[in-house]
Image (cartoon, rainbow, N blue to C red; front, side, top):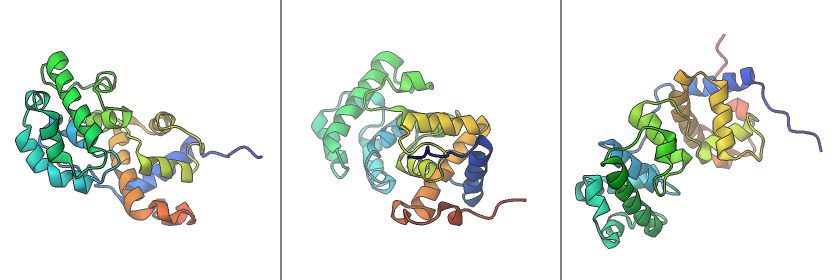
Length: 212
């Protein structure tokens, strides 16, 4: 079997920039009013649409305005607010545990490094990267199912690449100042231009015309 041919850094950079060209003003779609609630919203969005999370956020933020409030809440109260989400039992447990750690270790303040964020229960590299980018403006590319699909379809990464490997590859081919805009544009492109159902379409036909 022939080895998979991957795009060069320059070719990968061109694809990513043309995607940004298509969605130059894209931004995160989750609703949040502070970094604590951003962490919660991103945690809740796993295997659930952002729209569904946004529907429950007003009551959730009212019921749990602070890390301390959530840390001290009974699991049943948390579950009552988020029971329309997929995996709400485990999400409620992670939300409570993450809030407890924020209170006990960080005085209720959301940390601003990847290494510290991923220590929070229920927070993986993807969630941490979203919090860094959207909450702090710190350059990061979060790898979700859309980003994974796009990176593999364009052969920017191998077909068997893991999320962390995809993140490293994407961040390696772009300057840091483009990471956040690229992350958002990739998600929009994956949702609205190249959804999973278009698996038999040449992905290059979905890109805007190359800038001269």
